[in-house]
Image 1 (cartoon, rainbow, N blue to C red):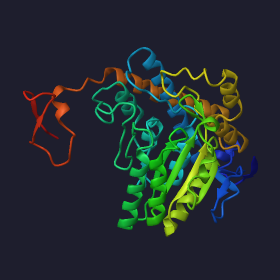
Image 2: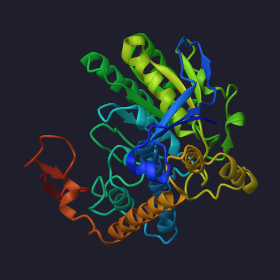
Image 3: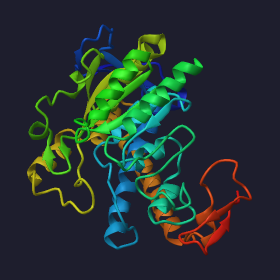
Length: 378
C-alpha cells in the first residue's frame, strides 16, 4: 500500500526520524458512464493524518458513549450509530469546503461533528438538554448547522431536498456543491430516481451518495435490490463506487468528483461501500441477520481507524506513542462531553415556542391546546 516515504523532514521530525508526508496507492474504484481521470495514489502529510485520526477516533468514542448512555436510559427514543462508517464523513469533508452543503439521513452524529458541532453539543442533543446543538429539540435524527441540512428521519426524503440545495448553488452560481446522502435501504425509493432526473436536467452540482453499509435495517442489500450496484442506478447520470473504509480513497475520489461537478458537468451518483458495527438502531441487536463472525472479520481486516493507523505508522508520519497520546486526548474530549450532556439543564418551557420560523420575535404562538400560548423570542 505504501508507495514511498517522502524524505522532506522538519528539524523536529528529523530528530525522531519521522517523515512529513507519505504516498500510498489507492484501491481501484468502479465507474458507470463516467469519463473522468482519477488519481491512483494519495499523498498524506503528517498534520492531515493526525487530524483525520483524531476526528475518526472522536466519532467512534462518541458513538460508543452514546450506546452506553442509551442502555442506561439517559438517551431515549431512536438512536442510529455511525461506528464503522467514520471514513466516509471524515474523508468527504477533507475534499470539501465548509461552504459546501451536506444533507443526510438519521445516522448523522458523525456528520454533525465534521460540520463543526462539538462532541459535547452532539451528546447533549442526544440527552435532550439545552446545551445540545438544537437545544435538545431535535435529538439524534435532527442535527443541523448553517451548511448541514439534517439529519432527516423519513427514509429517503432528504435526497430530493439535496437536489434542491444543489439547484440553489447552480442558480446562485456560487461554485458550491451539495452532498446528498442516503443508505442502501433507501436506495429503492421512487423519489430518489426523480431527484436524479431533475438534477441531471438542471445539471445541478449534487453528489448523490449511497452509504452502502450492506444492510437496510435487517435486510441485506442483495436481498432487497434486483440491482445492488447502486452507483449504476442513475441511468444517464455518471456513477462511481469507492472503498468507504479507506479515508484516503474517499478523500481523493470525492475531490475528483466534486471538481468535475464544479466545472458545470452536473450530478454524480456515488456508492461508498462501508459497514456498520452496531444494529440498524438500538432496538436492533444486529445479530439475527448476520453473524458475529462477520462483524469481527470486518473489524479485523477493514476497520477504517485501524487502516489509517497502519498508514501513519508505515509512512513513519508519527510514532506509536504519539498515537496513544492522541487517543488519550480523544478519550478526554468525549468523557468531558458525556459529563456535559449529563449536567446540562433541561429545556425551559418557554423554549418550546421558539425556533419555529425566522423573523418571528414577539409573535404569539399557540401551544397544544387553545388555552396555551407563548411568545416567540430569540
